[in-house]
Picture 1 (cartoon, rainbow, N blue to C red):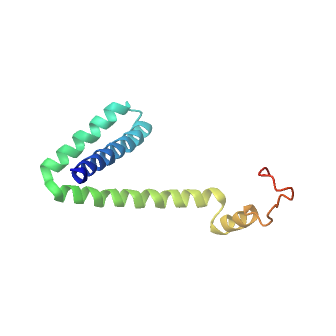
Picture 2: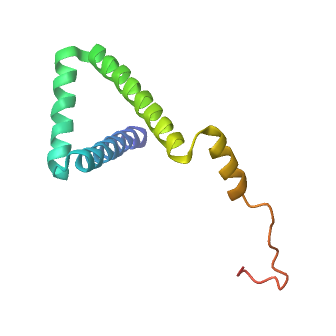
Picture 3: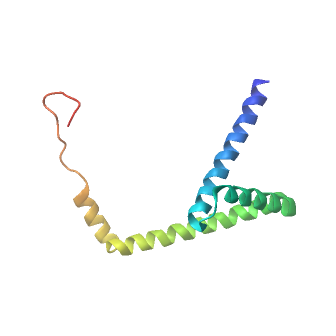
Length: 111
């Protein structure tokens, strides 16, 4: 009984977090209402699953991976362009990294 209950609770909490995070993204990207975003995600998921079954879910996951890799590449190149390239990034990182540690001699927890 407890195993089934914990499994059901895990599934519902995972689904609710996934729906909420996807809806927040859609809300920020498209300026939609949060509840409309959740509804659109649920409808889109139901339609894709009913029409194509598990194969459609797998294809959508492949498309999501391609979108995430493309977005990461765009972000990488835009960020490198913003800081002046890889060498400028490494140079500014080495300047920003602390190289001296401050030890508080009076042993209080405040720096």
